[in-house]
Length: 262
Image (cartoon, rainbow, N blue to C red; front, side, top):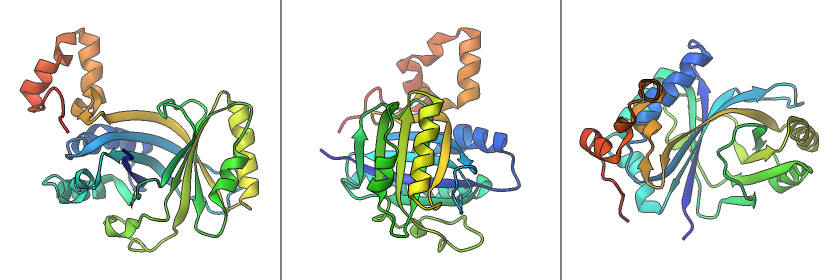
């Protein structure tokens, strides 16, 4: 069965720091979002725009979220669940823009398999809806050090329906044809590949270095990070209180089943 994917491109509000954005998205907003029913997986990618790759217009996104769902019924909870209205309201605390692309089945392709959960020497590239062929850009990213490559077709998703945060263009801003996620074995391979891709894209391809990856939901269930936030987990580990991480504790405190049935 082919799962459905939703991609969110997130821009930080300019009046909050990057540090606060990272902590709030991970430990407050992310913990809330991990409780939306129906998520099969939810991964946060904290990214930095790369301004020296030749792109003429680098959108200032600092977060990419990728969520998967088993089917359309599960994805309906993203908009219709009780917690969703609070999620959208909370976005206004930290995001200037939150562009959500609900992709059709098969809209994302794995061109080279990998875990997608290693930040080192990894990046996203955004291909604008300007006639540049996404697969041409993906081909330019090939390098001896290429370890992983994923292509997300964003054309089928309309982010305007969800976006409530854009204070300037009301969701009618620049649109993208695809997002490409790559990872290389070393920094040199990554930079060479990104330079080739941006040159192939005539300066219109924006690149984003992946700094941190946080798995909030995995296999249909919130992770310990998705339940508690980073500070709580760090405190538990520092105290050696491993019994706080047992399934029975999670079930008792958070009212979550040990396994999620389908």
